[in-house]
Figure (tube, rainbow, N blue to C red):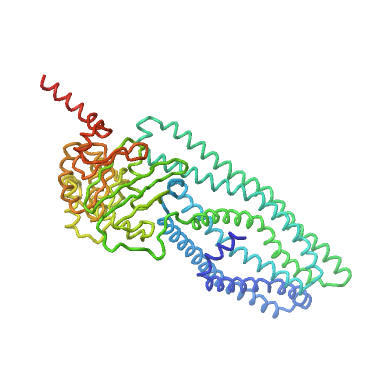
Length: 582
């Protein structure tokens, strides 16, 4: 009932249209209630008296009622579709907006395929619930109720007999709901699993082909698809078991009514016209009874889908802007990590990090894979909350700042470069959509990207494929770098931003970045010494802790972890030069 009430809440903005729809349904159903009385009049008044004038009047009434019902049916269908499509539009828009506000932690634990399943299959299930469930249920309840009222006015005794069938139908319906609900839940969950597998396989199709694993992936997909088939067949078996039973109970109403009516006629308690007319009401009562199994199946499926959507809606972000937020007096790029620790689940990623960065300084972060380099700069934009300590930007704890204002001052070139299926120009101006073409070109030149961009078929108007398909890794990194440069933040984060380019291109980018980073606080995460040696401050992470810090020259003289990295990276170069000299 809680879920059903939430669905009704989604209908509230369209309550006026829903009331009009119910009014139309009431009039349509009431017009149908007249038909058995016309039948009674034909049997009792027209046939015995051969009253052709009355017969013509009754036929004209039937034709007029049919025309009116056709018009009302059209209006009802349009209203229902408007309501359902509008609810779907609102729900999809709100859900998408809500998911934009969710933290990284949500996307760490929910697969993209699962999310897409919710945004498509579950929303469609909810739409069917509104159209065929809520409105259809109201329509059939109106028919059943008005039929009972009409039949009771014709013969209350026959009506009591018909009411006796209701408990049996309700009992079977309750049993069906209890049995079919878990089956529908299994179908929805397995659909999410199948969508996840499909999305991951298509996204990683190059890896699949590189390792010749097509047959394996086909088999895995077939296995998950078979589960979907089995779960759907289970739903079908349950429905096919209960539907004939419910239909049989409803169908028994007609012979029982005829027998009871014949007995009442024998006693003189009703006439033949009332019996024939009551038979018409019986068909109107049987139809909703027969549809109960369909409604239970449909509504249960819709409620299961709605529960998944409600779960997403109620899942609040772990990272939210405070009310009211605190704002720094000036955004200049000062950063302080004060005894910061961060745990992901039970795993400690960073421990007791203390770091002070003045505006305009360049800070390099080095360390082996898994030491927490990316996590350190991720905390800067409050994509996760620290477990202990605090991070301050421009003197204010980031947990007290407005999230959008905080992140608006931070430009990021991520380790995993992501470009949208858009033009190169629009990818560069993603953070500043109002930027002029001149500004886009200047950012591209600063990132050493303009040369290859002009070689593409349409230059800056060339549309790149999903995730930047059609561009090399180095080209994608340079476009992403141009995007961050155009963003013009007070803090720039370069997370292995030149890892996919060659040494020569990297040297050119470094020259351009030297101008870009002037007066801008910059965090550089890199594995190459060449990328960090000019940094004002270099920190080396080991096991989530700062093992050492200092300038390039200081760390080389200290002969610690940084010096070891330096020797490893220069050894091959020295050996190669020695070989050339020989």
